[in-house]
Amino acid sequence: MTIHFKPLSKHVGVEVIGLDLSKACTAQEEEMLRSAFVEHDLLLVRQAGLSPEDQARFARIFGDIEIRNKSSDSDGITQHVSNTRKDGILGDGEILFHQDHLFYQHPLKALILYGLEIPASGSVTKFRSGSAVLAQLPPSLRRKLESVECLHLYNYAADYTKRQDLSKAPDSAPRAWQPLVWNNIDAKRKTLWLSPLNVVGYRGVTNEEGEALLQEVNSIADSSEETVYAHHWAPGDLLIWNNQMLHHARMPFNNAEPRTLRRTPIVSKASASEMSAEMSERIESIRKTRGFILPHHGLMAICDMPLLKAYDAFYTELALNKRALDEHDKELVWVMCLIATQEAIPIHHIRNLRRSGGSDLEVAELARIASVVWGATSFKFVANNFSNYLPDFDRKEEYWKLYSAASDGLSIGPRMASLTALAACVCQARWEEFGWHLENAYELNVPEPEIAEAISIPMFPGDAANYFYPACQIWRRLIRSGTLNASAAFKTWAYLPDHDPTAG
Image (cartoon, rainbow, N blue to C red; front, side, top):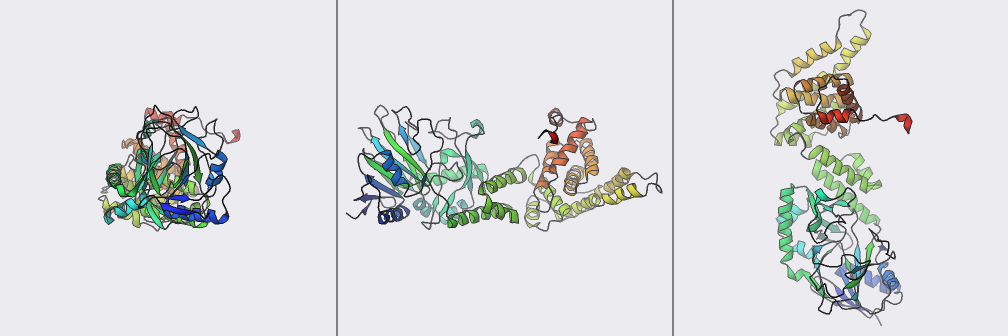
C-alpha cells in the first residue's frame, strides 16, 4: 500500500496513512516522509506496539539521535516523559509554548513522542507554526525582530514551568544566543524562535525594549488560534515535529492518572548550505552590531562557529555594553585606540561618538594626546644615546612637559585625557609612560574600574597587538611597590600569585 498524507490543520501537520513502522521504510518512503516533514513540519503515525528500536529507526530517517543531559537509566536512543516512571523526565505540570534546546548553540532539529500511557481524562499537546505567526505580524514589527537576538538559558535544577533566572543559574547551565527570526534554508521560510520562559537577555535592543517586544509578539502568537494544531493523545500515537519551525505547549492534565510518552530527540549535521547560511547570518549580525567586518570574523565563522559566537559575546560585553564608562567616554577611548593603532575604519565609532554628544574638536584633541605618546620614543632615544652630552636631561620631566602642554585646557578634561593617554600607551606598548600615566590617573582620583575599562578596549582594534596582559602586570607591580594607593579590591588583585612559566 502506498503511503499518503491527510492534513491535520491549516498550518501544521499531516497524518501519514499506510505506513508500517515495525519494519524499515523503503528509500521511496523515506524520501516522501522527509519531503512531507519539510513542507508540513509535523507528521502523525498511529501504530500500537512500536519498540524503542522501531522508534529510533524511524528517527534516523530525519537526522541523528542525540540525548543531552542523559540519565543513568537512558538506553541512549529514547527517554520517557512520565509522571510514573522512576527515570521519567518533565513528568507533570503545564508547559507554555516553547522550542526545545534553544539554549544550546544547535537546537534540536526534531522530536518524536510516542504515546505509551495516556490519562483516561485526556491529554493535549499544542503545536504552533512560528512561520504562520511571523507572517501575521505588522511589517514594521517583523523588520525590528530580524535585528534582535535572545540569550536562552536553562537551569536543569530549576522549575521548568517557570521563567529562568540568570542570577540563580550555575555557570554550567547551558546558554546560547539565538536569532528571534530564523531562516529555514530547506523550507525557504522564516520562523520565530520563541521560548519566553528561557530568555534572559537581548542583543540589538535594550533588555527593557526586548521584554516589551517579546511580550508583544507572544501576545499576538497566543491569540492566533488558526496557527495551532491541538493533538489529543491516544496510546500508539507517534508524532514527529520540526522543533525549529514549531512551538509546542503541554496543556494541563490530571496528574493523578499515569501519563508516559517515549521521547527521541533528533539533531542534524549541518550541510554545506546550512553552514554557509549560518555563517552569513552570524557575520551579518556582527556587521549590524559593529558597522564593519574584519577578516578574522570570517575565519572563525568557517573554522569554529562556537568560537565566533563566544568572541562576539565577549566583544559585546567588554566593548559595547555599559560598564564603568558612559557611552560618550567609552567612544572617546575607542577613537583614541583607532588613532594610536592607525586603524582606518573609524566610521562606526566616530558615529557613536557624535551620537553620544561628542564633537570633531574632541577627536582633534585625542590626536594631540596620541602624538605625545607616539613621540615618547624621541625622549627615550635622547636619554639612551645623548646622556654623555646632556647629563641633566630628564626623560620623564621632558615628556610630562609636552603632555601637560598638549592636555592643558582640553574640552575632554583631565580625567578623559588621562584615560585616553593610558589606552594609547597600551596600544603602542609605551610601558614606562603607561606607568607615569597610571600615577597621574590615581592623583586625579580616576576610578579604578574606569582605568580597567580604558586599558581593556585596546584588545579589539584589528591593527592593535594584544598588550592588555603586560599592562595588567605593570599595574599590579606599581600597586605592590606602593607607588599607587589602590583600593582594597585592587590590592587583592595585585597580590594574586604570579604565573611561573617554568611550572608548566
